Amino acid sequence: MTSLIIQLATAEDTERLGQDLALALVKGDLVTLSGDLGAGKSTLARGLIRTIANDGTYEVPSPTFTIVQSYPELRLPISHVDLYRLSSGEEIDELGLDEALEDGAVLVEWPERADDALAKPTIRINLLNDGDGRKAEIEGEAASLARLQRSLSIRTFLGRAGYATADRRYLLGDASARGYETVDTGCVRPLILMNSPYNPGGPILRDGKTYMQIAHLSQSVTAFVAINQLLRSNGFYVPQIMSDDLDNGFLLLENLGSEGILDDKGAPIVERYEASVRLLARMHERSWARDIEVAKNRSHHVHDFDRDAMMIEVELLSDWYVRRMSGKPLTPEQKDEYVGAWDIVFSQLTNSEKSLVQRDFHSPNILWRSEATGTDRVGLIDFQDAMIGPSAYDVASLVLDARVTIDPALQKHLLDAYIEERRSRDASFNEAAFLQAFSIMAAQRNAKILGIFVRLDERDGKPYYLKHLPRIQTYLASALVHPSLKPVREWCEKMGILSLELQ
Image (tube, rainbow, N blue to C red; front, top):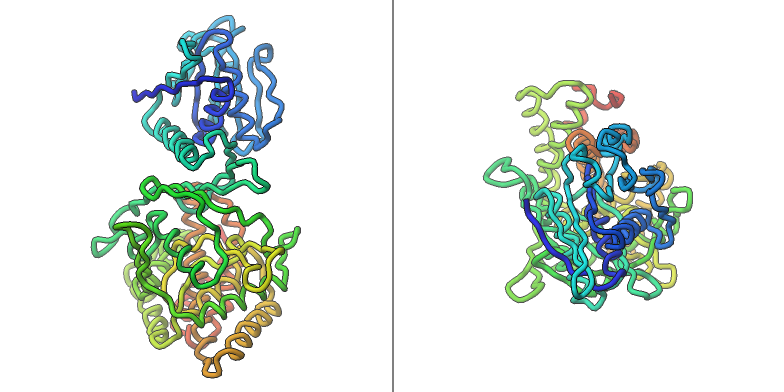
């Protein structure tokens, strides 16, 4: 069993260890805290629970007399257990800890009172007094301890940036391996910590490449830094990078706030969507560098959104969504017909206008900066997967927002605004060619998303995204009306997938 030792000179250090531990926990973790009276077990537990509660003043009563204090309402439900008053290990079964581990994590003080009746802990912490204060001896299962060690590495990274004692709070995890935290440095607005370890990309699928390599998805923070630099140098507002550790995948970023382009009921704010689509029009006028130097001996190449990348994405629909809808996988002949239909469609993009494609240009990744003017009002994030591809792609991503219902009238308004902006600055803009590419890219993107959201449920245990499927089904059906999509539309009609309900 792997182990590490952490020096804790003060009670604040002990509480910060609880904070760092909290940001490493996942459902199913059993953490035990051993140590004499006054060794700091309750201090560490308080720091942990307050961090998960995202509240530095959250009430954390001692479970000494209740034995179990449960917090089911937290982001990660926590059961805080104190076995000091336990009569014998036989009473453990009555505490319901197995059930608690199914839904969240369990933190146990005085585990030695359980007489080996506890399940095997994933992390074991022993707090000891020594000459300079306290120290924590930590052992754990390899996977659990690796998560804790990465969290502690973030604390070290913050220390190098001058924020060793900053309060860390969970912000969000997205559909990828990335995670985000807020880092309270005492300024008006906390900074944002991006935690993005190198992603090797999963199994080899074809031609010696993984899905990520075929689809040209970023595998490290180098891509984010490069595209950030590229966008900023061209006058678009992206977060300032305050500090970076490219080797370990940590970035400390300017916080662009939480004001987006939706109102407090989650409906689109027309002015902000229009400003965003007009920003795309400005972006599509530019010429974009393909190779960006990020640091000494470290650069990033902006790939083409090529046929293979487009195809591997739409195959998510055939491999995941269709199987979910019909209850069975496609036959090889059906799959060949599907790929052939898309090949015909994609061949029509050969001469379409190309520009920088951010790839997920929609409401979750657009922040509204009301204090700014012009294009600076639109703050951009989550652009690390950018490529050079049909400029209509990002327009389709926004106009058919996967997370928000954009009614047909607003869709038309936004398309008209984009076309007007392009025409006003480029008399040669080809509206018909753009609308053709828009329909193809809208169908490609929504086919991909249908597959991804089913995969997130089935493979990754994230059913949250399924609620968006009816909207995306509607978007796909509307895109397939364009004559350019006839081969794919006919395949979908033959398979009956546009009329199937989610099983």
